[in-house]
Image 1 (cartoon, helix red, strand yellow):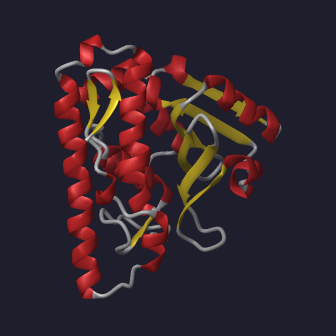
Image 2 (cartoon, one colour):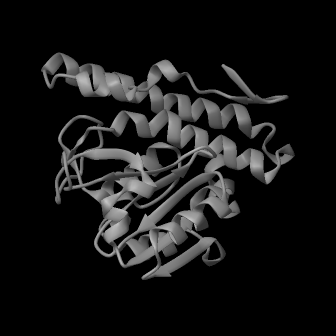
Image 3 (cartoon, helix red, strand yellow):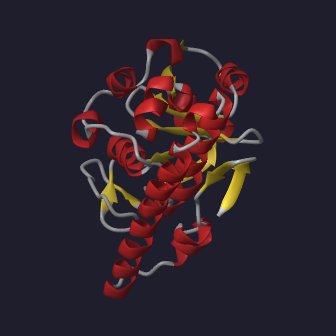
Length: 229
């Protein structure tokens, strides 16, 4: 158990998640499939325990601290398990490394398993902008049309640390600003055709989209209030 702030505990046992190198080595056998299920179930249990532990002090936390708790759980406990999972346009998997998952289902499944209450299937099948506006308050949503990648990345840098949902012309994914690097995490048909975590500034998929909608879910107080409860 790691103390995130004095008197604030974030229960995240990193042994529960499949680190990227471990994920890439997984073999799709019956034994491995069973291990994946157990491993991911333990991660989801850690989310539950972290929420329970932090709930007692939640009202004493600053907005920045709340965002840190939510973002860390999502980006470091749930997401790493999914890296390398196969992409398919019709993929609806709920288990990392098993079956395939489409871009919208990747976003909604990760958020649901990180503890966000949402309509996984309905939102996954929406246009990405509709998904974002359904979840996030308008004051935390920004739209970009025909802007340069430099300007887009600078906007994320300016908004700071946290987790974002991004909607593109024909795609969606998550953006994680760790404070040191900005990552685009998405299930994609490009390249290795799987869930990828790449530096946002170098992403061809981000660059080629003329229209982008960016919603910062980790700073939305409505999301955080529902999440902890």
